[in-house]
Image (cartoon, rainbow, N blue to C red; front, top):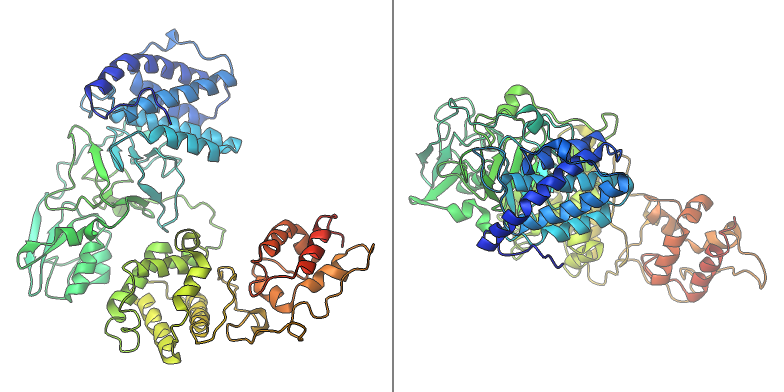
Length: 620
């Protein structure tokens, strides 16, 4: 996308451009804020434009000297124009004259961009135009050259930009747009987004002089030296909960480095969300290994009732009077935790104060029953389980060790994505890893034994316990039933001569799910029906006579076998008129494409019959 303002970030040309244009955008920012009320825009949008745009860009402007636009159309046009111009300045590396005397250059411009993007998003979502508007905003922001970044706005929010993915505590994508302002005062009504409450109320983001000192301690052990900075710790309890022989919450010393196996110590260090922990072998710090070898994509996770957990070497810029803040002595810059409750003693970093003040996120719908995926703890919990399974239990097992000796490095994450999708989470496996057909290919020709299948189930259930997944009877019954069913399906599909259906949908498991009767599934070991045999789908097909109207009961219902019906009951009933009529366009598209039913293609006569019924009003 062509951008007249784009130039090298931080270059003299960028700053000349800023001097030329910032006064103009400041005047228009004030005019836009004044236009919001006459345009009928809601209070949340008006607050963003006043506190997040007009005041940072024109802190000393005379409001009365800037008349409001005359109507909604003028206001919308001004919003789009100003968003494009301010984003271009920001992308070019320009810096605004910050309204906070001790603030870092550029923080106010980042705040204005994020607030304009948020206003565009709120209005577009209400108008049902967010998909189009998101694409437009992403095009504006793509010229920024500094990569994934979190900018700390003095007395204001965190601005996330550059492609770092924002996720919730379950690992699900949060669609906040390409440049997002995140609340760090704890008082926003739009969490995790910022609604400018911090700016209007005067948020104090200074560090507490009485905070825990910034000092890295060394604990020398038999196999490794554990490094720890208590001044950076966010007190998540992950290390003390998972490796209590090494890390101690309520006693000194905090670390007894010879109290656990080396692999368990390394796992706990790498999983530390604050970056406070590290380790050394023979006195040499394993910084690259602690930081996952740079393999993690940039991401910001909104922890439940807790901080923002940043991973993947997202740059942290700005800060209240400190230039570029670092997490602390010896702490990781690949992963760190930022305060979200507003009460940390070590702002912008989390110090664990959310525990003390009982910080809580709003519950969207307390009456809603969570999915199995949500109850399990989402992708983080499932990934922790699969990592424990493949790292702790599989390598030394005589049955499973050889089977997985050559697995890909991301295999645990792939299995977690599969399980997450099965249990009601995001469709990450289908979208990123090839879906059902790819999983099928992973098992073909493996010739798994029943002993291997049973051991896989046993050790995975043990890993679920080790990972701290819920232990209530309802969850274990639902989780265990799928693990048993899915493993038996994998065993069947792996056998020599197996012919598993290619086009089965992803299985979906909820609290009421059972696998269904055997007749509802096409076995990979079932013999292939020959043409004209009783198993031939077209055997006995009753076609309508010439000129005879096509009806559901007389002609269409017979097209679907009992096994077709059983395989789709998780979604709808192929023997019920209302269900088939509702889904007729999708069914027709799939039978024409040959992806339904899952084990064969319909003959041209069957496709033509269903198409005739669907295209003549779906008569009953």
